[in-house]
Image (cartoon, rainbow, N blue to C red):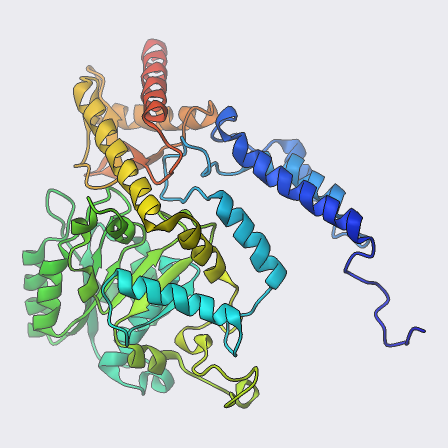
Length: 486
């Protein structure tokens, strides 16, 4: 007998066998996509037909799972940005794994909210944070949180730094006119300046320090800037070091910057978006020497750990300061000594989000499935490939290496004789666009010392030397054709 309070429709399937068959078929679509990566173009434009299919009105009646999956397969799946492909080489995107596919499916079935309370998913995230704390040499009293990415992790780390210097009153009274200033390299990611804007500090209080010839922060210039600001009445409070700059992969001297931060009593935040995880490679861990001295460290699992998007992390050395910067528990979120409302403190007290998905599961499953030895070997292989590409460029008289190959990023350009620099900039820009349009490879275009450069980032565990050979062959082929027609 039904009640008038019963829902008029049931969202869970009544034919369980048919539903399972549809779900298995959907999983096969995903796995077939991964299995067939090499047989497809790296990127292809979204055709008008697919765009039109994605402009339909809001559906009032459902069409069922099979038809919905078919629509995804036909109008969405073929037209991604290509970062699972081994010749996706332009931006620092992770490439995903089969274990990640399964993890996302399991997390969706579990559908946990990790804002807090007492349940197993919370302990999975705490396990991941404990692993990262140990990996980077942070003390057991350090805290951490999984977030969307390094951009949000940087906001959290700098929010703790701000409160550390201004005190608890900053949460209710705002920044005030304290003249706070901080420092980072001119090569640092734009997300750092955005964090200053979001925190109400203003991007003008972030001092961009000149880089050296190797694109790392000039520590002498940093010290001079701190002295000048103190003399002018400003209040330095933080310095942000970068491990793996987005443009060239340069890594700041963390040890030297940490010494300055300690002497000047500044908060040291490290942006290790992808470079921090070089610590997993025995051959490259010295490149992040000193990272354990950071007061806060931001990095991504969805880059060099290949976890599906999105999954970033913030570690904070002073766990008590981290909690003080964000903790807020209204009556409707009251805890308890026992039961589901236990589990103090809740994870939502370490960041701005109360509703938090189960990001930790895909990180936990990636680490448990593959282990740090294999993940570190994949990182080392990417760095070896970058060195290989750099050497190929240096041997080719028509190409110019634009920056030292520090980790996994190679910046180069085609430099035909008889062209001025402006013409060469235009040529290299056209080459990159044609590489994309032809489906050969997907590097990006950047500027190094003011000149256009083809930027190759290697963070894909599927990339091989043959893929880089194909990239260079495509560059030469397009350059030759453009030279003939110009």
